[in-house]
Length: 138
Image 1 (cartoon, rainbow, N blue to C red):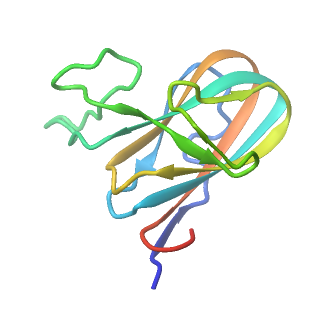
Image 2 (cartoon, rainbow, N blue to C red):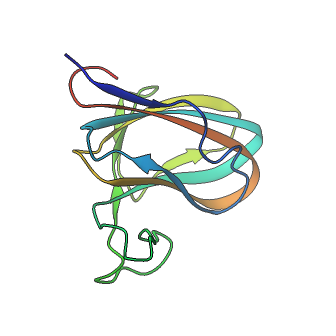
């Protein structure tokens, strides 16, 4: 039987700037499906980062906008774009230049942390909702 987790309240509200936005801890789940809504003439690139590095004693998570280091480990993740049916390379990301809704799947393989990292931002808002599943469909 599939077990699911749904973080249907957008943990970050409407995203409207460059930066890293933490989407949650998905350690118990194999796949994460993200529902993405871009509004207000959006123009940005979204990449998805994962990490299994535990939070340090002070509770700090890895920072995917900082340089890689032994105490700051993360990976850019490829993802499946449900709209196009393509696997998108993590380094390419999702380029958003028009109002749109997208659904993408990260094969997280029980990763601990997941972020959306926004770059090349010039306009618009982005909302992201996440659902995790360990077997079958999310």
